[in-house]
Length: 417
Image (cartoon, rainbow, N blue to C red; front, side):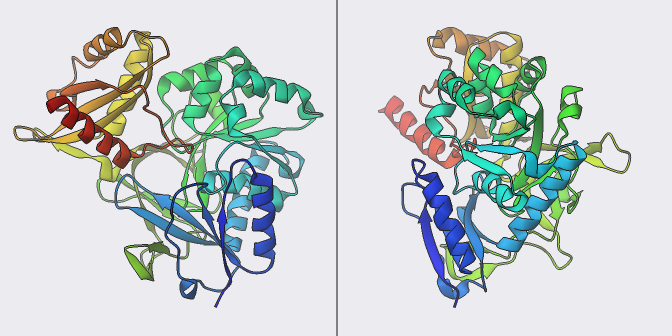
């Protein structure tokens, strides 16, 4: 039976956590990474194959939390594929400095550290407080010796990117990076245009815990030239679309299996008999810069679709569309989330949760947003708009739709009581 170590990833002691993780892996152990707070189901040690490896939580919009088993050699291969992608951009991986502001218990925060081990590159964790204070981040940059002497790499989610772009100090920081991988959630067109206008070398990418992080990445030069989407596949990845446009991935670094607390005594396989894994996302494949490659564009979650008035509606696409309209109309919109409620007439009807920018007139914002989507088909227009000042994504840039669905139910009870 393999050794199993539980490691709670304290954001205030990430270097210590990383040292413990490295030591356990050297012993051949499996390490189950945990969030800094809250309970987490524990995988039975009897289900673990020979190590070393990492157990990482992964959850979609529905279906509950899953835990993926990623052996060390799969994570090594992921790092190798990303390193080859960097070389194609003219960068030497071992000469880079990797700055990491993402949670260690997520694959997005684990892999920057893992890549540094594989490449022999320097890695530095960025404290969450720095990412929330662009002025303090700029001071940290200015005090970091030799920062401008080598390529600097960064991984961000769109929420973090917007927060930094909103402040001149944040823009100055972002302009120092050779590559800024953007993933975890969709990059809106207005945010992409702001980044291009500032000359930021963004590389929108797509990946998951199941695939040991990114499987596609758009080169920064293509992004700056106006290309959209998440780029072509990395060297060890094949892509295709399944039924209704479901993104399917074939790569030798798929997780060994998935464990859930609902079926605690077994592991579920990820791929079919031909090695293809079907993700929970919808996408399309578009021509890329090279005729031999296709570029991925992610459309939204398969399990996020709703049926309203006889129409199939994808809330995530509508959120992006509304963000685009709001940007064009210069509305003070900080965040928007579309959720569904049951409706006798429509089957399901959309409700919009809205967070205004700090100090903005909420009533004026709602009026402007309703005007923006006034020309949409009826099924796509929210039947209710609610101001939600606390509306935020997780640290990894994703919406906890179940949490906000509960918030919506409680709010409606309050309104009708």
